[in-house]
Image (cartoon, rainbow over all chains, first blue to last red):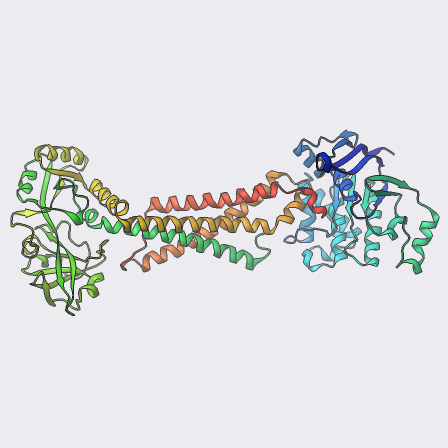
Length: 247
Length: 366
């Protein structure tokens, strides 16, 4: 499988002089097509910083980011916009749908922005709404939906323009456990159907067994953990649901 | 986006309308004042004014010999000329108090007289002891009806008619009569003196050359076209007197406050959606797309608000047309005001666009 997203020696520091704080310390990563990774770590460990760099939203202090084998030029704002527009899909903690547009329009506007043909947009919207069981809600506004429904729409929005990379920042943080689990399962399923790289940041360790890779970050250092049977077993033990295992 | 929150949309339009109306009303007051202090000059229907040198305004015309009328008539290009006398005298209010009035003495053609009558006829000024006062001055002068008698400078006057919409910029109401009658009341004019010679030219295209010829023929007077005299009068009242400067400052502040409110309203409506713009930036929307959204939004809100504000202003102009303090405008002023307001709307949008583009798209992750 080809590497769609590659980080080479990525670092990120804030401040200057004696007050420099290094948030990311030389991150080297490769994400293959269709691979689902989860990024975990305590608050302030650098998860969101790394996700922002992967999403071409934040320039690293050093290192190189390659998207589909092309180095991202962080000094060129318009090329960053183009990469985000064509190759990336985002899912945010609060869904962040546009409240003044219907679900249908929330999806269509992303397709139009990505330069898709209207017929293609219509087909794609229909397909995703079917797959995510959102058809009955397509003419409603985001405020008329539950948190879980909104996140399902956010998944559809992230995938609509067939991005090669989907990044999700704590997509279940505002949801209860069952709804959150359903959302993540749907996200994984859809990303796999689309053969997209999926990187999800979460605090919820109960989600870990669902992913292909577990990336743990602490004090700016990234460590890759192996998925173990024990983790999976623990995950599926209902008695442990309220006390999930740490890494 | 705009119609999503209809009450917010309505309040924004209303806010911009009222802000525009505030600005337009202040400018309208200024225009009303300007029109008022040059109204008699502009309504006289003449091309040229001959006056004593250094006359600042119609209200402060000083004596020139009546023979200047004949001298003016002898200048080539002059079609006709007649006199006007302006003086300040005491008016006896029926309740006992005395107030100062500005007497305008008219010649046979009534040039410089009231241009609209509500009761009586302008020719009444040529009857002995007869005057015309304006409807707006009835209360100030204590006049109730046509034919009422009172005293001016200790001599009897009879109300022969009421004019309409002849306002005064000073506190002294205008009282129109004939030059002959005026000479009886204004003590500091001799019988062979007037204040102005009003001139009409044979050819309207030659007004300036006729003006120059009169100035060459008659040495001890100043000769101005109607436009020049109106400008001088306006400049005197507006720039050389405290009241004029106060009106200008008030109008300027009103205009500034109005357009700044409009600008701020448009800025704040963008700020209300700042998170949505951050999301759009993160999703890869081009800056030009966001710019066009914000500008379109501003044009709809600004245009709608200005249109409604203009309607309010037009209604107010009509309602105040016959009041002592009218709101008035001209096509040029209205155009400038609209463009100025739109400029501030665009400025508000520009600042909000800057604020949006300064957004860190990373903020969507927080």
